[in-house]
Length: 115
Length: 115
Image 1 (cartoon, rainbow over the protein chains, first blue to last red):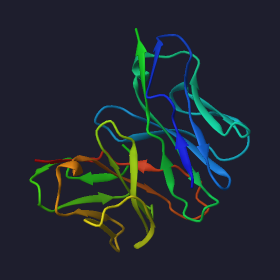
Image 2 (cartoon, rainbow over the protein chains, first blue to last red):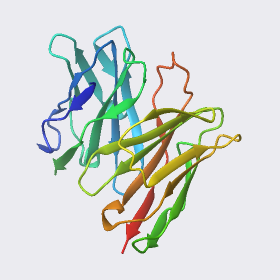
Image 3 (cartoon, chains in turn orange, red):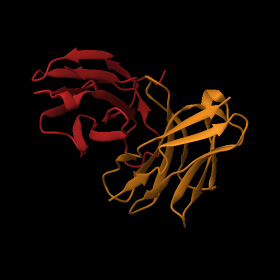
């Protein structure tokens, strides 16, 4: 069955430092991968997606993600963290090979950027 | 603003009661997804509808049901409510075609509190 894992419940990083939020996936076919951000008491907002093509995907607010097929990973990165980046981040996968085309979300990683 | 509207934003009710949550998808989106987010939990997929028909089912309890109407809005019905049903319920929409590679657009959620 398709799944997504976010191994870290929380990531702390100092403002101005680079950040990485990890995600690994397991699907039966080609993965369509997504990152979302959720601010307190708000809905999820789309950041970026990987469908095909370049392994490095650029998205909103200076975020980018690197797709690694051999490691089945799709880590979210940002070169320089801002305090305003503090939020809950979700990785998601859409399994285009299963026939259900469901979007499966990870458990989320809370990012805390310290001033 | 994602274009997805959910009502009510907040709902407080008692155990054993029944509530209905409503979702209006983005204009033109045919597919609606329902997710449950409990405290400190990730997003649990409940059910998906496409153009009025059930497309995929996740971890939805038998006490819960949903439907999508001809005007494409959707309702999630929760009955015989228990304390553990207290959660944030999200609706999301997408174009919904099989070949769709797009992201989901989320509403702001309906926060249900069962006392």
